[in-house]
Length: 64
Image 1 (cartoon, rainbow, N blue to C red):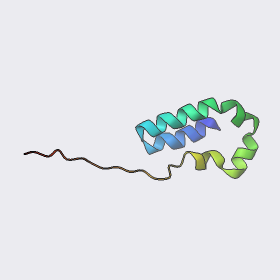
Image 2: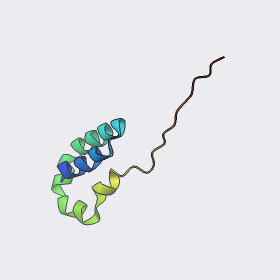
Image 3: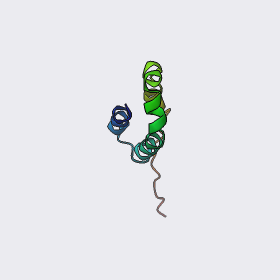
């Protein structure tokens, strides 16, 4: 289950976000495996790795 959720996060291709998701899922692996059916039923992990929002912007250098 952890692998499938990691793949979902990888598809988003957001560098730091992907790394954070991987670290969190790795640290929770024992808990997730012990309660896998409950997490699947509620789709908790899939919702957990869905970013609330992504803010992207450019800063232009001011030339004088």
